[in-house]
Length: 80
Image (cartoon, rainbow, N blue to C red; front, side, top):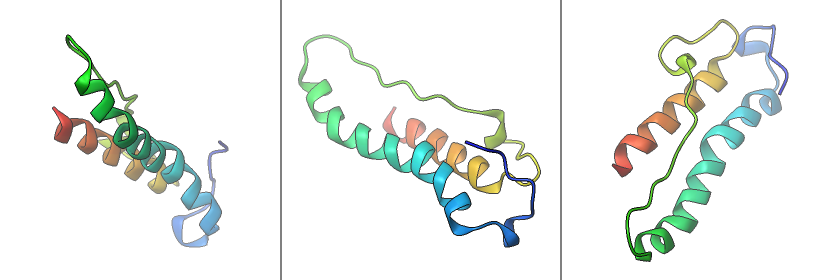
C-alpha cells in the first residue's frame, strides 16, 4: 500500500478507503465469521490483531491508516 504524500482533503476516495478496508473491515468480517466457531472449540482460543503506533500518534498524510488501526485496537479491546 503506497503512502500518500498529499493532505487528506486532496486524496482520492480510493486512497482513503483502501487502508480502511484492509485494516478495519476485513478483520471485522473475518472475526465475525470465525469467532462463534472458535468459541465452540474445546480449550482456549485467541484472536490476534496487528496494531500500529499510528493509532496513538498518527503520521502526517496517513489519517485513514491511523484511523483504521485505531478501529482495530478498539475491536480487540471490545472482544476481550
